[in-house]
Length: 154
Length: 273
Image 1: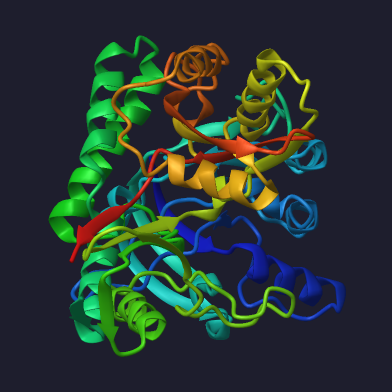
Image 2: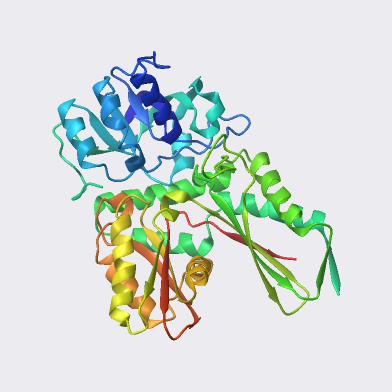
């Protein structure tokens, strides 16, 4: 169970973050010590904090992840396998990769206490949100020593 | 000749988007519940328990079962004696947009596949079959892309054995591994041409999931479950909930086989007007 702050980012947000890193620009939030959740939620229904918000396939972010880890990112939450390079980077930077219950976006929505826009509003569902969650049910997929819950990498 | 107003089609489609996205199919939920009872791996059972709980919350609170409310696929069986008053295609598209907007479902479609751009609601795919009669059956299937990305097509030699076909299907699931939200429902299309085999594989997912009708379906289900990928990829006996195979005549020179994998949140809803 994980409680606290996390930032949503998926494909296009990653692409932009990496572009910013390469150009030496300031990132929209301080990556150091933070957790990224690979998630693009549905719109927020009236009276709710957030819509359905389960994890998306992590491997699509593999090309970007080592660079973000180098910049101080501490953890990631998603679903499925990671690449060899990502696993090596997780080990090198003593980070951690969690698995969230995939396809359970409605259940997870109930555990999000606050949500606010951080950056890239124009990306729609791929914008970066800051979420405060309580008791997110997670499983450690890859730990800081590089131990992998799955037998193979992607 | 029976007439149906375009507005009625729009309303029906809008309702279907809500039903499909928020209420898990009863045949599927039945299979998940029975898998939950039979599952011996604790982690796998917990993952199945979360799926059941998620389905309940989604239905009660009208939340999308999955945030990936998919690319909406619309299957239409149009009776040849039905006359639509108005623009049929526009009516369907409008219904999708209306339903998705009203429920605040995710915009998961980019208008230009190469330039990408800001996601929108417009871009549903409509498959139409002309059938006998004067009814109009509409099915909406919001297909998530985590699993759609694992689709496969292979043009086999006409002399290929059934074992080679089985192996292709099993390998497709093995390749998807834990990434596409197992336990899976596997649709297989055999025959036709490259395009039609793919369509058959997709249509196979619309069929009732309860009972395998072909020996091939039983064999595949058993073999795929022996992969022990399990719910969330954490092992266990529940890798696949059902395998549905559809076949069609094909050319003497070929044997197309398509595999369409669905995540455990296989969503569809139908109405007959």
